[in-house]
Amino acid sequence: MEISDIMILAIIVTSLATFLSRFLGAITSEKVSVKSKIFQWFNCVAYSTLAALIGRMIIFPAGVLSDSDLIFRLIVLASCILVFIIFKRNLVMPTILSAFLLAFLNNI
Image (tube, rainbow, N blue to C red):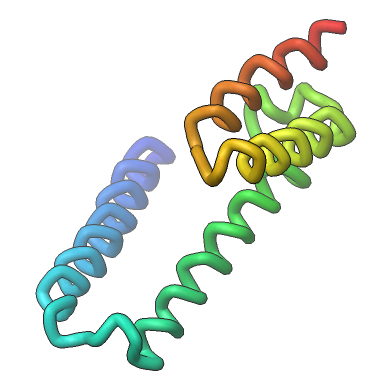
């Protein structure tokens, strides 16, 4: 098997796994109470997975992000968290700030 075939197979398998879990979640969502322990557990797993991915992206970046220094990425992260809190949990402002601030810091 060539590398392109393996990549296509990996994309198909991961897509099926993602869509299958979403489909099963949509089917069973009416039967699960928002206040149940299982729902809280899934919520914790989702947030921990997201935190791990963001942490990995900041500490061990891939692609273009790896060209920036770790200190710049940490400054952008701290600034965006602060802006997120100041603007009452608005996601738009920190997202815009992160792009401009990282570009600015990398160009000085």
